[in-house]
Length: 73
Image 1 (cartoon, rainbow, N blue to C red):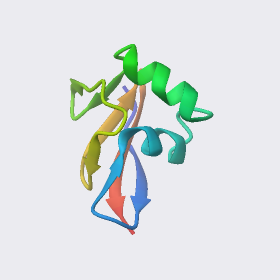
Image 2 (image 1 turned 135 degrees about the vertical axis):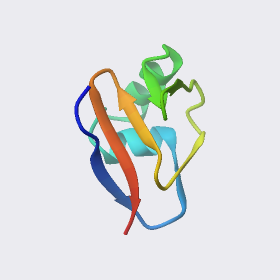
Image 3 (image 1 turned 180 degrees about the vertical axis):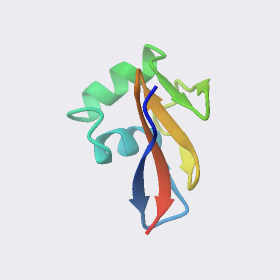
């Protein structure tokens, strides 16, 4: 696992699918849906299969070996 890359957002939380796109971990919403449903995404070390899950500032999200940390702008 790599060190998390900071991804700044304006709000206090962001939907999981949107975060994956913003962080360039996936190409589009369709790919985000697939990797989330297949259980390839973890939030703070736990698999989350909810595309619309609200991911708060400070959370670490990983897709396979690429990780990002949600930060506040």
